[in-house]
Length: 121
Image (cartoon, rainbow, N blue to C red; front, top):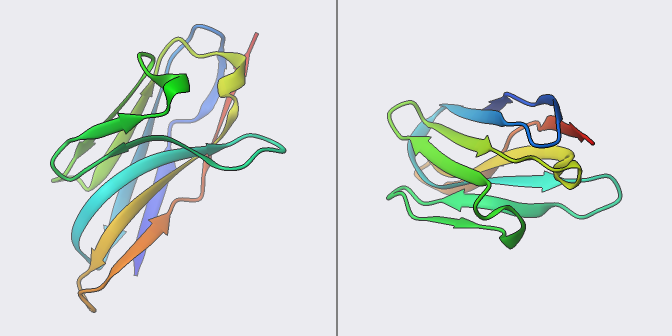
């Protein structure tokens, strides 16, 4: 019913930048919070950044000052700007969204398929 499609990952040198995008589509009445998580090999998935429908944000301490989350509600898209990348930022990045589904008017959490970010030293 609802799909999240990510794009923008890739290979970058330490100190470089990337911009991730995640577009939601399908039977959407409204989208509440949206967020980005990441999972490195052998580690648990962790929250990177989140943003409410009103634009309030929060970040993991490890990315504060380097990453910026924003969203375009009209496009149903959330973005993550990654600056000053470090090798320890290497992970699969997943977006998620708290969606009120139009056909049922119930809320569900949806996840994207993930996009690989690799930072070389």
